[in-house]
Structure formats: structure tokens, C-alpha cells
Image (cartoon, rainbow, N blue to C red; front, side, top):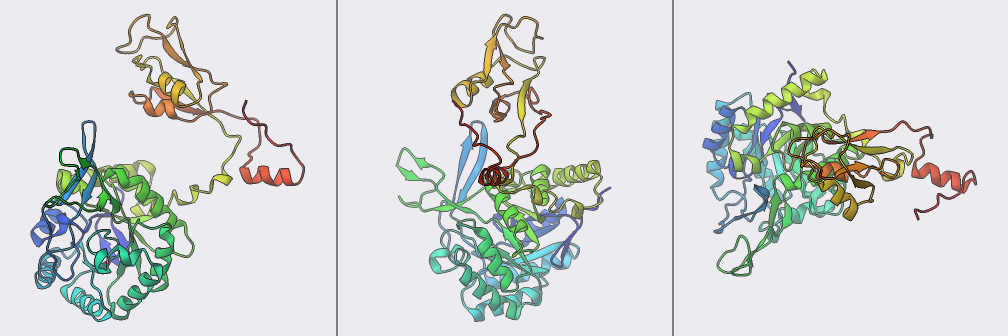
Length: 436
């Protein structure tokens, strides 16, 4: 059985699944429940000078029958006293010595950062996470994303923290920036031990069309919130990979953003994460989801022949290159399994109206009759000579593995855009004519 234990910059935990800083990690009671369920670590809800929250605080983007595909919040950092938070961190760590307990911090001055670093270490925390990502409320006070969006400021504050650091320091980065690697490099330059990303994305999820105020609203007004949940996963994966691939970063990564199951976690790990943090999915389904995550990741690692999580970390990072490196001669085409086809013809409609018009509707003679298909109704057939391999038909098809993308064995040597430009410049080939 694969070993799920990890070591992120000196912070050890029995598995890579951590509760992210947020509502589920607000109290010792919740952290006890998380560890009882099997979570490997907890990043405490951010501690700073206590704030006053508003009512209401959350809104969501639903998609069909799927609830909370995207989740928006205008909640701020902990509204509990500093003393209570550090006392409870100590209590949790004493009860769960084998689990990772990380204090999340957000203050303003050099002296306060020193004070909070010392209090974190004294409480028994295994490490700290610096919240440089919150996109609402705290940034208006010169903290949160106001720090993370300015690499020189990130570097300065991390340098303050490292002056007093005796335990590992993780810098939590904001996605509300043009290029997250600049902030990651600043954290590295200042001496950070690791980074975590992404924090929430500045957003408005919906407008209440009865009162014409965006949700959530407070006494007739609303504000921009932090967006998270499954919808942000692609953005998070991109930023994690960017930092993992950057030779000027080279820091351990704790991945965050839309992780809801073991597959999501495995993807983050393959793109460079050592640990993964989960918040929205816990708020939706509760702490026990980690049981399936642990089981699923263990089975996956075993099936791949990996001995530990370490064998998966970063495996997919080098496969992502600039577009100009991709092979222009590589070809894939769509093929339909008629035994599975239900005759909805969504593939035909999508290809005809939204893609490359290479699917025809033909009489079903000689083809197997899939479940639910109407006898005599025309069926889709791909013209492979015209198929550009865009994948759209396979993506819209409602039946798993009914339409698959098949790689063709080509007889032309690999040629990237860079190769093409070089050959043109040397006069070794003519320009490729455009499509008619």
C-alpha cells in the first residue's frame, strides 16, 4: 500500500489532505472533528486583530442541478480573540501530535508580525501561513491581497516574518494578479519556506433580480467577494503549475482551489503540490469526505505502481510547454461507439454550429442500435478526413466513452511552430496555405 505521508518544508502529516484556512477551521471543536475524520492537517482560520463580520456573507453559482459549483464569500478573518485562537491551537496540537497544525496570520506592522510569529511557535503550531490573498475587506486595510498583488511589498513583509521565524513559513498567494510567479519569486527571495495557492478570486456571483442588488447583500448594499469552489480549479491548476515550473521559485507548494475528491487532489499533486487544502467541499458535504479521498488516492497510487505521494509530486509539470512547442503534425480524430450511442445527436449539432462541420447524419443501416435510440432515426458519422480533433463532440456527448478521441499514426516528422518558423527563415519550406 502506498505511503500517503508527506513532508512540506519540514511540516509533516500522515496524508496530504489539509483543511484550508476558513470557516471549517475556525475552532478547536471543528479541528478535532476534522482529525477524527482523518484529515492530515489543518490551517487555522486567519488570526489577526479581531474583526466584525456582516450578515449575510455567502452566495453561490449553481449549474443546473449542481449546487455551489462556484462559491462566493465576504467573510473576513477570525472574529474570535487572539488569545482564544492560540490557546485552542495549543490544545489541538497536544491532542493530535501527529497531525499538521498551521497558524494562518494577517497583521500590519513589523512588530506585530514578530509578535504573532512568536505566539504561533509558543502555541506548538507546526508552521505558519501568511495570508496575502484575501480580496475583500482586509485589503481595504492594507492587508490580504493588497500585499500579495505587490511583489516588493510581499518580499518586505516576508523578510520581516523571517527575522522572527523559528518554524516553517508558507506564503499564501493571491490569484488576483497578472502573473502569480512574480509574487512567488518575491516570497522565495525573502526566505519563505513554501507557498500555498490559490486564495480566492475577486468576484460577483449573481445579481438578485428582485431587488437588483448582488448577492450576498447587507442592508441594501453588496461588495466584491472571494470566489472558490469547483469552478476555480482550472485557474488554480494553471497557477500551481506555473510556480512549480519556474526555476526562480522552486519552493514546496500547498495546492488550493476547487479540490473536491481524490482525482482533483491527484491532479494538483501531479502539477507540483505536496499537500492539498480543501474548504468549500467541506462546507458543502462535511469532514467525512476525506475518507473517500484517502481511499481513492491510495488506490490510484497503488495502481500506478507508486510507492508514495512523493512519486507523484510534479510528474505532469514538464509536460506543459509553450504552444509553439506542440507538434503541428500530430492528429486525433473522433470515433463513435454505436452500441453506446443514444441518438441525441448533440455531437452533430455542436460540430455543425460550433465547430468544423465534419459530422454527417446518415441512415442507421448496418449500425448497432444503442440504448434509447429511435429506430430509423438518422445517426451521426464522423468524416475523419475532415476532423481536426477539436474534442468538442466528445465533450458534449452525455454518454461516457461513446465518443473517443483516437490518435492516428502519421508519416510526417514532428514539426512545431518554432520548427516551422526556423525552416521558413532558412528557405527550407514554403508557407503553409490557409484553409479555404
